[in-house]
Image (cartoon, rainbow, N blue to C red; front, top):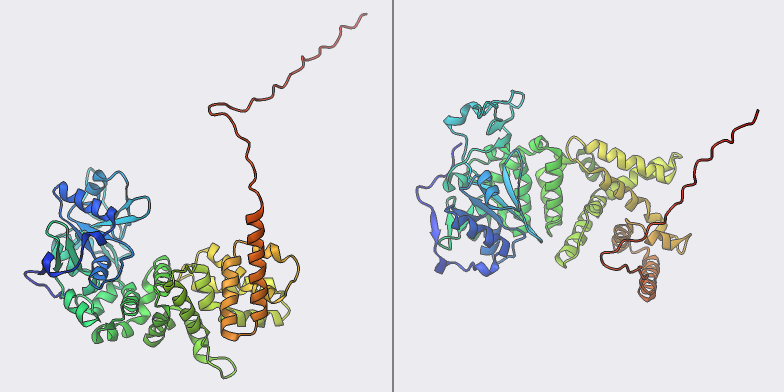
Length: 465
């Protein structure tokens, strides 16, 4: 791979940048200082450094070090090693998880025999009589399946995805280290891959979704050559594993800039590659009218997230596929299939159609069905047993979906107000009820067990002759 290597990194000393350790997670600082005190190199890396330089609050703090995963595990009792593709150490604290990775390098001649096709058998030098899995593994299409060749900080920086994500903060000198030109791209507002974008997206197609998310979230522009590669390779996005794609799609639409992400997915063709049936339905429209509800739903979602609200995964999926599924459900219902059964069928059909691309958890699918199938019930006021609907686990998401639909159509204002009053009255009644008193037991005593008397077994009286 032709990477943009630099002999010496660009350094920003402590007096020339505004990042303060007071902005760091206390747990991340503990991890950095413990690694340093035991003689290891330890840096903050990636999004946290990028966000701090931009004056944003990082969501998480990642650490990179020359300590191997095994050495990290021996230093921290709260460590758990995870991942096969990338071997990582997760350090668990009360309120967060700090991810610690070892500096990695690109495949070298020393490990050339490890780059075997996916259908090949496990190879590698035996250790202790056991055959070890390969440390570097690619599929026939060039997708990296395993990457655990350790290297230097420079090698690690140059094998990352984007320049703005390859910045290090050195806890020993309090300086910023830049091997790839990330500082300049931050100043220009550019998302640029490290190296050839065609190679980088081929190695890991999920990077295309990450490029869209970072551009939307940071308000940056995707560099022209990177955008061309993204558009040309959009069909390869399905080579990623379904669970990983599901995770990335959730991050994409829940980053607070979901509408921008949605528009970029449509413009690049990635949406068509991910959801071909939905994309075709969007392009076709209904009765000559375009489908604009997804964009409005993303705006509604972004507003709630940026106000500090929480959007669940099932509600997000309902926003994305709701109108599409409701149209299919109406067609089934008009053919004579009951409402509940028709919703079961369309949601199950969606999960099945996406299974090879996007792995939606079964529990989430059931909750999506409940959200969509309960919408007609909200319009019937008071209806039968309205309080039983409020106590359902899916009620908050179902009512949030109803609120959104009403904000778009404006046809159910009276129903929204009625349910709002019922919710408030129900909450007030619960507050006024005295708490149930639990029986108090003395410390160290156990409830006395009732003795059960067992009668003696009766024997038959001897019979007289």
